[in-house]
Image (tube, rainbow, N blue to C red):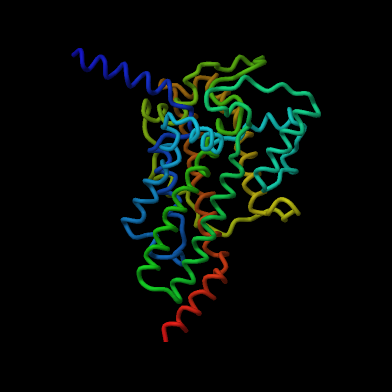
Length: 335
């Protein structure tokens, strides 16, 4: 009994120490499973092999595993990739439509704004991440581009490579699909698009909850305490993945980057409705109906966006020209 008491104390302490995150592992797995089921028949068949599907589902939690470390350097690098507090754009006098797909240009814009507007730096936390509104638009875009790269060289290896090279390239595609999935899934949890990520902060005329357990409740404890998402019903609502519709590219912002920004902004619109549901008692264990529908819709939204990104990356990935040249030269040298 004493050992059980200490174990419970340790687990509770660990939960309090861990940073807020979007969806728990089971919800991230569900998003990936739904996205896999949305893929059309023309999508590469190796992805749908049972071991590869399971690896994609397992990798849904990988970027959160990086957050479990106590190493401040890794936490500083990784944690801001999971969120984007849209409200802080106003503080920096920046507009979402003016963001660049260059991550460090955004850092420069923030630094310049702090100087020009004489903004005080927030008090630094231990891993020095409070100074940033987050980098979620860039983590989605950059991981999407890495997936395109993986498909690009896979296409060449399939035509000109050895069986070992093809197998390794396929394994890399699976890995890249899994890593991208996490950040797309994060975004469908509206609390990862707002400074109100774990209870309302600042002026609160509507008297929304300020409890510091709100984020984890939405991530998964709500479903655990009531009933899990109805995966069969969600599958019925799935449409087949399609090429992602993107805004027109700008000089410093590609269409796919802007599509990711728009996706984040659409989820941000749901922050206050989520708090309204909580205030009305629709996110409690006693009256979960409307809350269930809301959160299940968000899981489906994440899955559809993810399926579209996977399909678009494969469909539009050009053959890796450098690799083609290298393999052609290798073939000649072997003769």
